[in-house]
Amino acid sequence: MGDVLAGFHAAWEFESDSVLIRFERGIRTPKLFQALGERRIPLEAIAAVTLTPGKRGTVVLHAVPRPGADPLMEAAAGQLKDGCDPYRLVLPAERETLAEYYADELRAQLPPGSSEPTDRYLVTAPEAPLQFKAYDGKASFDGKSVSFRWFWTGASSAKWKAGDQNFLVTDISGIEWRSPEVFEGHLRLLPRETPAGGQAAQADQDPAAVVFGLGYGPVHESLPFAASVLSAVRTCGPALTPGAGTVPSAAPAVRRDPADIAERIRHLGELHQAGLLTDEEFTTKKAELLAEL
Image: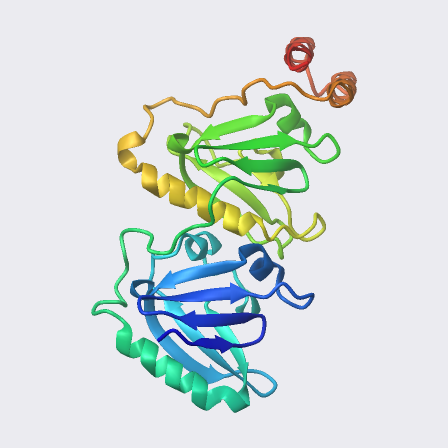
């Protein structure tokens, strides 16, 4: 088609085999849309197209994604509010006739069986490297591994004791993402090999998770981050699953700011004095920090 339909916060460009969605960067644009920038949705990733009345004199053009086609929507797991759904284009009611035309055109181009679930991602995930700052640490993804570096101002004693973390994609089976708009928002990496025992720890105590959400600050970059990791995990496939007993490895040593190391050692000393670290744990962690200088 090659035409553009502009709505509130986004514009859809209709191409022969896909829809290119460009999100605005205005003050009123949802933060998630600003983090996404733009997305190309292949027609084979669309299950259906609807046009329905919206709020306050608007209509909503909705390209319903196929189950399993988009790592972003899989990571979101139904938690996105309508106003933050990247597959919805809100338009003034006077454009309803034009929107209906494009809806019909899209429906006519959907391939047979488009409503069936897909066994592979059809929408490209945001590209690595990606990073974001959560409440208790900084998360980074380089395409091969995810690293968490804890902030001394927010990380729990359990995370300090565990140290900064580095998880190879081949050690990850999936992502648990809880929206930053809820109280217990977080991003947790799920291991391929689940340790024997009970349930996973709370996110603020789990070295495989970073915390955000109400009271901690909204981190909308976390969802594109989760989608990118999921896509990499799916690409690796079960053939690369590590053997039983494999656990995520610690982050490789890198040179750090001496002032940062000194502050971390001071914090370790406080944990030690409070009885949260044993003498051996304190000595070991202090030696690890000094080795990073």
